[in-house]
Length: 122
Figure 1 (cartoon, rainbow, N blue to C red):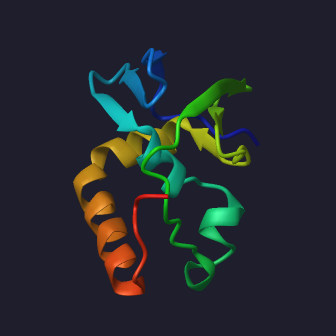
Figure 2: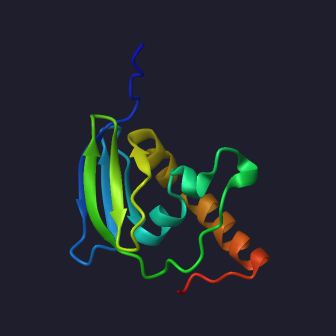
């Protein structure tokens, strides 16, 4: 049984500096994601683990850039970062959710860094 996507992008654009990805969705919402935000919240098992307890707080990515964006079927993109990370598949739903919950997710990330004595800078 195939899963139907509930949200679809109508435009995906990487800025010339390669540090910001903009996505316009057909539902009228559009989001602009900083490369650091996408990198530290990668949906990969390397970052998310296989359970909440295994999730990793990724420090030192304030200067990370997007090296490439590769389509994966008709449901996602693989974002390749200049630090070599390339295992996250960003589904349309995941990207939409990140945009919709940006402020909460970013605040949680910053709090985790502080709690663990980690920094955003490399």
